[in-house]
Length: 261
Ligand code: G
Ligand code: G
Ligand code: MN
Ligand code: NA
Image (tube, rainbow, N blue to C red; front, side, top):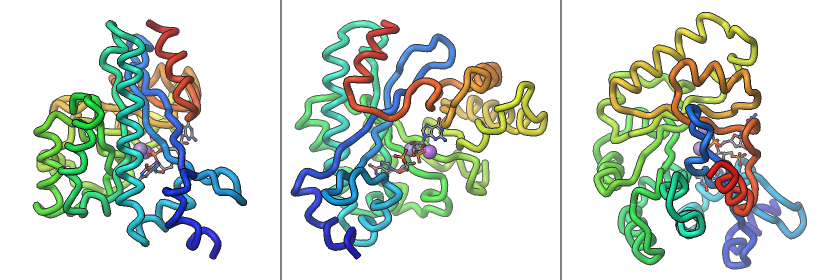
């Protein structure tokens, strides 16, 4: 239908844009970075979220050039944040970029990423690549090799939507991952205070396991202060959600980062 025919040229037409949602340190409330979330400003249908076109982009192969574009824009944005905020916590602001499994299978991924970082002139530690747990379940060595190379360069790898798949927890040791992003469903169950005791135990267990493997824990979908407080008490490191900010234009992150500087 309409989206299928318009998608291949949308990149050349400059119809994609990126919104950024801050990642906040639960201990001190400082902004540590942001997740880049792509949108398509369709000439007829208006703003479309990734759920509307990422599957199509994966199917048509556009995900590779689109992913490269998102990566370069995001890294440029992160460089600007670091430059504008100078010394201090903002000095280490990071950008999280989602990676589709198709991009991981594309042989040019490592090379493209290196070239983008060099062209933009930023260190690899500016970047955290997010892959869903389901993308990495059962991943063989061919798929993990590029991921290991990226991790060795100093890029963080995050396991997105963690806890929704059924990954063998021991499997985590095999993956070059440094961050677990706990799925929003766990955050939702922290809505009541006190939260369901079984959910509390599960999150507590995940956090203990993650920390013992030297992984940081980020929580998604934090909508209330009560959720943030319970997740902080459970030892989670970083949070993301509407309680702090909705995804928005890059200027919004300047304001938030400056506000707590
Ligand atoms: O934008 P929204 O908050 O609705 O995000 C929905 C999902 O779309 C995210 O969880 C993420 O997995 C996916 N997504 C957003 N931006 C990108 C992107 O640049 N590339 C890929 N592959 N997925 C993305
Ligand atoms: O990569 P991922 O699919 O996790 O991207 C995050 C998604 O979650 C995006 O679609 C974003 O708009 C959404 N989101 C971000 N913060 C919140 C929140 O606090 N509550 C809910 N319900 N959704 C959120
Ligand atoms: Mn994500
Ligand atoms: Na997620």
